[in-house]
Image (cartoon, rainbow over all chains, first blue to last red):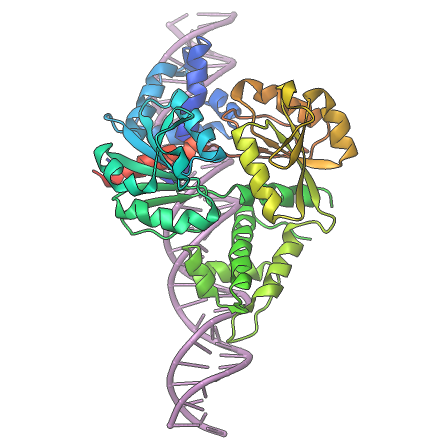
Length: 208
Length: 208
DNA sequence: TTAAATTTGTGAATCAATTCACACTTTATT
DNA sequence: AATAAAGTGTGAATTGATTCACAAATTTAA
């Protein structure tokens, strides 16, 4: 299967969320320009992305919503699902567990880890919390392939190394520390402060 | 002043964080290839970005760290600072307040808002919380130009409209709802689930 | 059943971001 | 000094993402 560009993957994921809302509202078909408007992009962009799914619409009626959701799912997800661990069960980790629990059946948060050993054994936001010492064995036994880093800066590098050593395949890093991982681990970094500074910059610009 | 591309702004923000760490470690000069390595990009990319700052290095010694931090700050921030409001003081809102309080003196979180009126008047993660009915008056009196959306989906659209009507200039949206704002409001959207699905996709790919 | 109106899919063109390649400056070395 | 080594700054080339422009398909209307 050919590898889609990251940008396209991101948009497909977002289209899917909109499409799920369509289903709730009983909307069966959607035009490229409708989907485009929802996401503030051009209809051509939408069609280009859907082209890569090798998915064809019924002419003049738009894309059948359910089938499109299905097609996106096939591209994005593996049929068996993937298991996720959250490193750092503070506010951010808890927020993420809650979001994820609700709507992504193929991405299951099956374990949380925290240095604070008083959290061990407790269930926080629906996720069972463990001590770091158990990491390796739980990653193995629960078949966890993805780790989300929501620990404080000071703990970031160590937590990342633990994950890599435990054989994780992908890491999503919300820490403000730029991590380094082996080649066989996929790393996605996102920094909220950077986003906020970007907004601040463009607001400043618009005021000049 | 010329408008820099968003991508460059993001990287400058990240460089600055690394540079602040350098200062802590007593490092006075840094080469483009060092900064590049920290961020997993090429040295040319770093130099291109710094070029846009119209900032020149001392040959053969690298860039003077403190002056560079200064130069980036001048581009990114307005000298008077900018005030920020957080919409939705749940786990995510709290996490953000904490992060921001610590390290960005020019971006001050001065108010939080929540539908849950029992939070009104309380201080959560260092931020005073208010009822939504007070929004307009506080945005004005506190001179708030940026809003961060961390409310649940159901409340997103309404909260966004309130912000826009109150005259906000920029919005950072962590909601899973794609928002629509007037032309004069800068909108940055970030969806954590999308990022996670991206990681999941590339992990799946690497396993085939 | 013909013509007009929509909407899709896509080659080609454009625009944006990144990398290449190299001239230039400085420092270190002989 | 002259030569080598290390870094920077940047025009030109490349790569990647988006948009343009339009043919083909389908529905609606006359």
